[in-house]
Amino acid sequence: MEFLMKKYCSLLFLFFTFVYGNAEQSGATDWFKNGVGYEIFFRSFYDSNGDGIGDIKGLIEKLDYLNDGVPGGNDLDIDFIWLTPIFQSGSFHGYDVIDYYTINPRYGTMEDFDTLIVEADKRGIRIILDLVLNHCSHKHPYFLEAAGDKTSSKRDWFLFSETNKTWMTWKKTSWGKIAENDYFWGTFGLPDWNAENPDTKAYLFDIARFWLAKGIGGFRLDAIKHLIEEEDNGKEKTINTAGTLSWLRDFSKMVKDINPEAVLIGEIWDSIESIAEYVNPEGANIDAAFNFGLRGTLFNIFGFGAKMYSKKVEYSQNALLSNDSSVVFSGNHDMQRLASEITTVDDLKAVAKMLFITPGIPFIYYGDEIRSLHSMGTSGDMLYRNAMAWSNAKNAGFTTAEKAKVLLSTEWEKRNVQNELSNKNSVLHTYIEMIQLRKSIPGFNNARWIEYSSTKDVASFFIETKTELYYCTLNISDKNQNVTIQESEIPVKDGVKRSMYEEFYPKHKENKWQKINGIKKIRVKSHELIILKLQ
Ligand SMILES: [Ca+2]
Ligand SMILES: [Ca+2]
Ligand SMILES: [Ca+2]
Figure 1: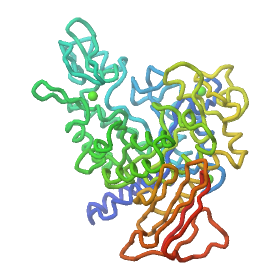
Figure 2 (figure 1 turned 90 degrees about the horizontal axis):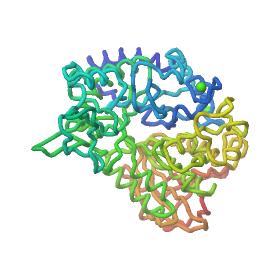
Figure 3 (figure 1 turned 135 degrees about the vertical axis):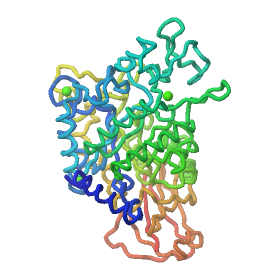
Figure 4 (figure 1 turned 180 degrees about the vertical axis):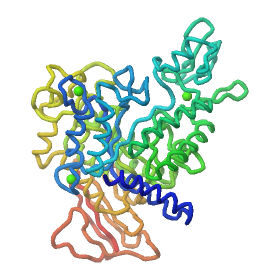
């Protein structure tokens, strides 16, 4: 009950903060700021009761694969899990919530959820819930009431219009027709909340309070840049508005007042400059946001080249000011799977190395670590929200049902957890090794990346943590390459010129500090990562 205990301690902490000032506050989210995350598309992870749909008990059964509670070993040692929506909803994906206080009965009960929190906590894992604040289901009782009666007190909880006004999202109107001269605003076709209405705001805040009281680690804020729409002189602004930023600043304060350890991660699918507004304390003041630009470059790294990736990391860290507000990720439920683009095992390993040597908060999209492919089919989100492949048993070991109610991934007979675990040279073992490597460098998530001499084939850069300086080189090409470090070009750290190096990764038994005299030449083999620690 490690962090459930901490919950009570944090109340004490709040008291002392009040009395003695907030000098210690910065450590409250260290579990997140130093951690590694994993996204689960909930209904596709593991089915415990044979109905063909993934569920909470299924996730509990598989927690040891994610983190067995003992540092090291053949598990991923991840620190937090983002679950796609688990609330009562009317769809496959769950982003259209009907009741924010009820677990989708397909997934289990509230008791199951409470057990999940306890079982996760035993292993040092925190649960991050997907919270959809922008919109709800057409079947949400408040929307039914508001749409059915123009005099309803819930009418002002949504945005209605008598005309199909000109507001646009994605170059088309998002006004949905209810009846003649009666339209509702729905960015995604689902009714947007009028989040600015104080009653609606209080309702949405209460939902967060309820789940925080259950001991969750925080929220992933879905589609949050669309929260509040503004109109000025007849000209609409539907994304990244000042209203959205200030609403979130209030929301963040409420969350931190309840639990200073809880975190908020924004889905702002936008430029790095727009994302920066959300993590800025003067802006939305949330803890972190998904770095979509960086993921795009990682996905296409063999086209763009290693140098462009390195430049992009630098650009992003300069815009965000601090890397520990940048979520770097292998993919998510809205994107092409990594292994569909990057086809060879060696290339996938190189990409895993790049991901885990990038400062920020890393997230793995479930299945990317076992090279999961899309399902066969022509289109649709279900193709990459497919069943986790656990073994080469029936239905990839996902369900004992005759047929899974989610799609199975292509080549699951080969690409599954059982096979990847038993093969020491697998991509999964590279993920495990890279996570361990990352955790062996304290403060890595918030380190600075200093581009040095990258080329299209090789990323060569320095990593500067609070206390240490490392030189890293990663060859993403099929050929061996030579790189050099000029002693005179090593960055000065804390006023000290460093020129001694130790082979940090891979580690060698005969490892001794050596001097770089003038120029050090390094041969970096195809797909190899080398890290030197400098002093
Ligand atoms: Ca089930
Ligand atoms: Ca472990
Ligand atoms: Ca909205």
